Length: 267
Image (cartoon, rainbow, N blue to C red; front, side):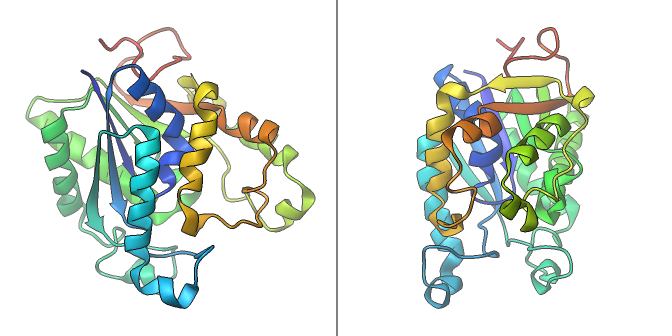
């Protein structure tokens, strides 16, 4: 049984960017391992009382992730054990327990131990820009590569490492579908997208898109019920999330480009 291992920063990241590929992998008989760096202790709280929820938000979001993981077919879910870093310039970002402040060697060592246990054929994380510049996404990129570098010195490497990305052309098309009110709120403005020529893999996950949306909805504390995103028309949602895009960063393509599956060429 081949294994897909994903390194994400916070609860809900897994559903948004890679939920379809996770379900497709499980449906294809592969093992799915989800590594989450933090428990999402920082950020806005929706659908719950702020004062009562804030002190134990990490516990709330851990339970939400457990539900989402069941929907996505995750075989094993594990945390790296760091605190959500928040955004640059905030006190949370300077917290010594945050993922952002963690020594690279230490964090890579924690991930290395999991990689050593699982020996996944396919690894997925973010590109160097973290999709939209979040410190924890960027840290996940560096930690994943550092852990793989350490294991490669011992003679082991996954067949392929992918970065989950959004094509620049797709981001442009999505923005054109966005209503003016949402644009004025700055939604999507922080995501320039990856140049299309760097995209190596396009995974059609349209058959899983409803469950993908259900998995994202499981993160109740992060879903603003009044947001345009939460009330997005089904047609637009399918346009935005029915195909997942990846950039092959290590290893060789398993087919002519663009690949249609992360496991292309892997037995």
